[in-house]
Length: 302
Image (cartoon, rainbow, N blue to C red; front, side, top):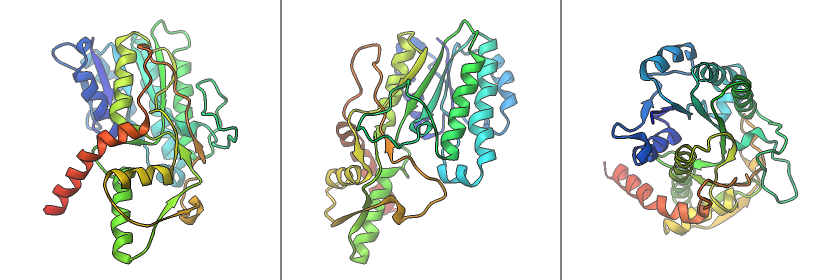
């Protein structure tokens, strides 16, 4: 099976490529990695040429503009990249009878839920920021393109992604801890945002499982198990990295920003074909931290 991945140079895209390289159904040549140089969200019409050249049977659309504050400052650009470009891709893929997975986000929900439940795949959406609105527009455009298509469309939402190549939440927490320690101050942690920390390697494996089981169709919530506040997540990073520093819980409003993130970013996981859910977020983080610490040590020694 020929599987192409857009945004193959990004955080999730590179993890999906790695997962598909290990999947038996992609054959000896593995997946087709489309980086920005091959297909650019700012020039989406080139997708026809790329599809006809590489002839995939399945496309996993990981490419997105994920700078949420940038999206808030330039909402029209966010809509073009995350909404319009996804529609262009979806229409081209549907016309050719290809299966498509569109990666989306918890930010299509408003985050105002107070009943303690994660958002289910069929819960009403209602984004409160430009990033979420643009990603929901991409979902809607893909659904419209596949409304009468014989092939399958999957919407794969995830939340609070972290993983290589760095500059993710765990890396930022460790850097902030160093700065706080140098200043002799406690590390201030956001306590009023709660979500589903999700490791890119695990989400990528789930996407590969959907493809391998021919279970692409529908809306999937692919997140590690459990939930955590930003402060909980940060303290687990510090514990795993053996960083001892006083911490102080603060509201997100401590740091004004262009975008308003949903306060409740918890997704209810949908069942995977094999019946096994993704592992708890703490176990996934424990697997990731050694590589992150090695990377930081190597950078510091240069």
